[in-house]
Length: 111
Image (cartoon, one colour):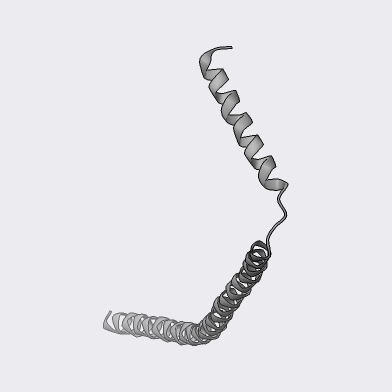
């Protein structure tokens, strides 16, 4: 083995020995209290995040409903305007036709 491998092996061995030494000690009451506090805090954080997500979801729902309503109103107005436009087209075509007919009658009278 080269020197670098020996150093890495030594470091790993030392780390394992230290961890096994810590694992054999019983947790103190303070350690248990810290663990319980961490669990409670974690649950509180999750609930707070859930409440934030809920509020965002409610806002998106309200916004979506408003957009659907406005979109429906715009469609209704648009359909009404289309109908008006089609009526104007029909009237314009009728007027052009009548004008052309009258012009042709006048031309034939002049001959």
